[in-house]
Length: 414
Ligand code: NIG
Ligand code: FE
Image (tube, rainbow, N blue to C red; front, side, top):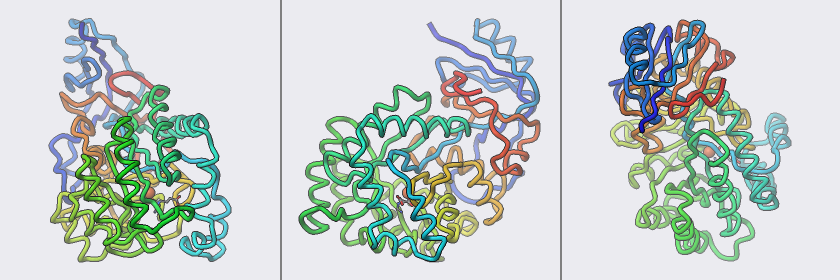
């Protein structure tokens, strides 16, 4: 028998319905519905409508009814489409060194950076990693995030990459949030690999990717295209093999230098993430493509670098999602809403553009069509803030915390 739930009234509800996937959004395009209720059936939205009207229908259906107190604003649950929250260790030392004048790449060359986290993650057990994922996921839950991507990429050998992906997989049963995992074994070339970069990438496509498929641990492959990581010509054969094996592609692109976003377009990647170094040429090419541009303001804040040119991307016609990049190196803050709000102030983004970047556009960056808008047929993933004015949410720059997070119709945080 179907299970119905009902939630209401909410003072303002932003369904994000019918907003386009690509391009700039005016705040006047944001539909703001007043005094609404949400009826769900088996975790999926059945209807969004006026509270009084829908409550009656909910009663007729015998729904579990939650009458909300106070003045609240409802948005689709946030989707953090780019994180590295499976790791061990801290890179507080790197952060202090960077602020004292060393660059990210200089620190990496001296044995700090990503390699330091690889060493510590290799030493950690699967259980310790799993508990870390659960802990950081809970922090996200308190921020209204209902879908969260998590990358491997600190194992960089068969055993430890699988250990990371298994830890993420097992964390799923203890968190009421959807975790989408991604293989980032092509993060950097591991120092201890005996062979060339091409040998390493061949090994990944021959051994690691089939093992991941066999255990159904991920269906996305990511790579870091950058000086000090992998070049266009090094990575293309690997990405083609990953595509042949059925993986979706997402890339760390144009972070410090350009090149990565054109690889993303060539591979029909679902997303190109970072883009801080993208110029007019890359912006135009991304806007013409179906690749979702993902801005990672947390990395700009962690590294003290420029933000991705989000205003120009949107004005040129690209689709832009916003993610936290939560990781121990470049983005240790992990506060998605704070970062998105700050990005909005520096890049002059409308409220609609920021909310779109955290909801349906972020869903598209993960290739997910069943979430990100509060309309019938979508998952009932909802975040509720204690305010009758949706503009308060970004204005408070993350300090206004959600009072409820709802995943598939159930209250999972309040
Ligand atoms: O998205 N750019 C490469 N990778 C990560 C950083 C990972 C790390 O520093 O540990 C990023 O910024
Ligand atoms: Fe990243």
